[in-house]
Image 1: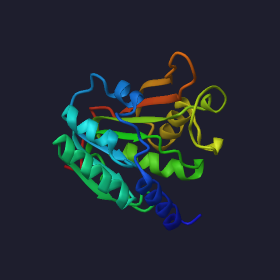
Image 2 (image 1 turned 180 degrees about the horizontal axis):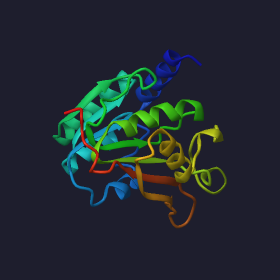
Image 3 (image 1 turned 45 degrees about the horizontal axis):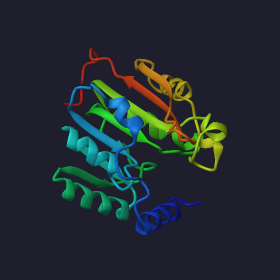
Image 4 (image 1 turned 60 degrees about the vertical axis):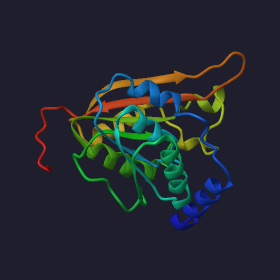
Length: 210
């Protein structure tokens, strides 16, 4: 399916209603706990629930998505919350974030086919400033058999170690701080099983881009 058709489908989903829930992704909250505040970038921000939450915590947040409907929803949420978020309409298959520019880059539930995932995730890692962190949250492979929800195409699922290995190929200097399977199990019932990956660019790397 062409990129324009996929974008239009996302516009329709966002137009139909807010499917992201009332609050931020719980695994995102777990992943950013105790990190020092700074500049944050969310790629594939959807309707902005996570981006607005980051801004409420004190992050100077930029949110990027290719759906103008999703971005409009995000602006409304930010206005209601009384926070400032920079919203950017970009196609992640054609645009890359500025290198060495953010203290935190967040990718939450951006389930791409493996051949598309590599370049987008590598560009996200390249956007980390020295000492910055990339947080990747997605449905773990275990979610297909033991969890709930997630993409119907199971080739888009991954483990945290898989993503860590892919990013190490793109940039061997990156350091893995956390690579965990997170089970969000209510009582009773099933819930999503997430991959949580937190990687860091060493602070000793000189920043040639500022």
